Image (cartoon, rainbow, N blue to C red; front, side, top):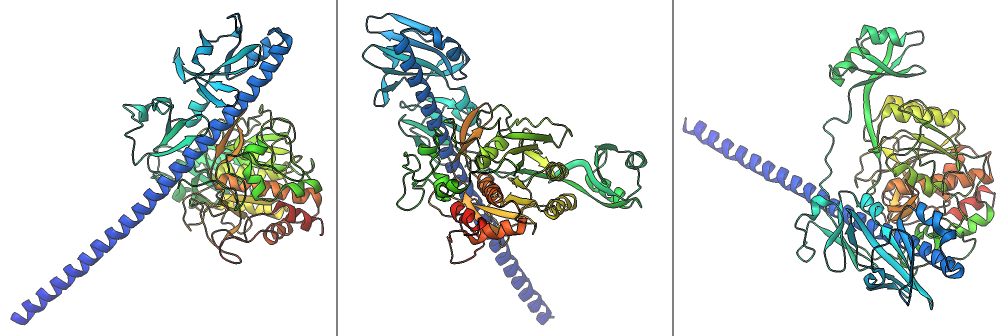
Length: 606
């Protein structure tokens, strides 16, 4: 009996020891995982802070250029009549004033009283700005320049900057006072006392600071649309009769693929019931899909070793376009060795690139003449207007109008854009909408499809759409994802899809970029300037931004050799890379960073 009690005690102690080791080991692993997640979140916050800095600087440079043009015209004509309509119609200037040394003032629009006295800071030689101020609930700023005759001063509206910052950041002026951004973060905000979890970066030339602290990203409780089911019916089956039999609404039908909804039943119930129907081939949840953009270790910003700073003007060689933001800001195009390639081809109007995303702004000056068609996969119509901004940004990277003095340069100058809206105003979509978008793109002539979106759930309907496109010899490009994990994302992980990881300005893998053996190549993905809704330009970061660099390259390759198959295009892009990271292929950077010039030469047979 004592032996039994002794053995019982021994096993109890052993069990408690094992449980203790398991408990502490499990919690230690969870703590390490949480620390890793917190570290990634802090990094993403810093990247976003730098994106804000970059965006504000581009915005202010564009406003400065506009002011100087107006000042030159005003002093030459000695009146503002020829500028009146232009100034009134400008989205960011409320007014413009010419103030002579004797006090005589001429105005167009609204300019606050005594504007010269407010110009207390020299932004750069000959250009002055005021402290930001609020008037009638609007954040404003004065900017002015002076020649021998008079001051020329514009009153600027900063609402665009505030809307871009949204709820993630605050911007403080030289005095440390909050004036732009997230009001919920600005309550009792003190820049001198701000510490972790805030991250901070400065805005050069302005002495403004950006503070960011975002909430940790939470996984969706349900990674699919509740109450919706995607069903493929057999030939001859009646979708409407099927809907009636299962007491569900038929939302959309394309071929044999149908989308049904019934909010009174769970998704699992719907899938089970439809799958059991003899007229059904398969049924699955309508999986959620979202953009792959990370707005988010403070780093120096040399584009590559011995190359100019990210925030400094670059002196380019070769065929440099005249777009106003190219020289100062588009470090990303230098990283992929593009200018010599442009001398061989800048694209072909017969090779369309489909951007499957949140849509595209059809009125953007750097995009409107490139869009030759569009589709809304939610409404099954041509309303592809971008309500979010993500798709417009992606489109600009791939194929913005180039050499037009305006804005940015796209990778491809001539390839047209098919604007395909499959993500909503929150840049979220679902497997059915993506599948519809892919099929429409193929049927409407796309030779290249870019998908800066994804989710970790494999979907039969999306996989079949990808296969359909691949079998039609379409080049399929997708972003690897932004969670810094090896977990496959779809559609990027499908074997028919060419997968792109992101690089930082130093030519290293971006910390957020997903990895795995399915990664094919890398491209720039941090602080990428591009087009944005409302005829604006912003910097964004993510594998979403890396992917369209490669889509644009695919367009250039097919432009010089349209007879290439999709696999031949894939091989050229892989084999022409500059190897980075570990020698040879690796799961973090694939075959390396794309080299546009080498790829175009290979496509042309050199």
